[in-house]
Image 1 (spheres, rainbow, N blue to C red):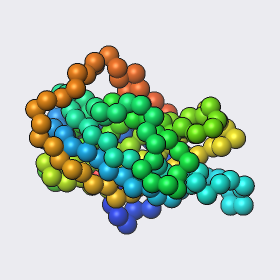
Image 2: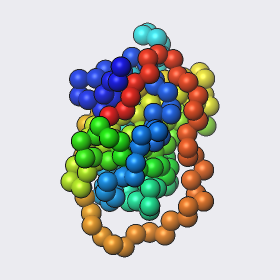
Image 3: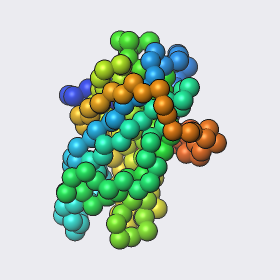
Length: 203
């Protein structure tokens, strides 16, 4: 049974299969391009770290960001590829965004889908937590932002997350875009490894 991952009432209990962050068999081309600044505020993440485990409160917060994206064909491109510091003052994490994809699916009510890989990086340790994010969009709005992290280089700071948060967009309509090298998509498509728990259909 399909479950809405970006629904405000949906509360994930486990990560989903990474294939659901890619176009499925009934997918089509995106119904509109994406050009705008995506804004996410800091928020507390869900994870599998046992209660009582010593850790700083700042590690619980997903970093806020405000980054321009544009599309080149079906490629979704973040304008900032450097380490992004959180726009708030609560999160320990920095963020690296990578190019993703846009497409459409029949049940999305005229909206298109976007998905992209990202990495959470720490300020003082050489560790990385690899994740995927997705949202729906049209010309003027975006849905909630759903993400999960299922692989990391720091097993002592394991984070496995499936969560969603309200997002917003400031649309832009500029015809001038930064040069984009299609060979830069080293992180796409994501690994199709299975994740524990129920399989959900993105919507």
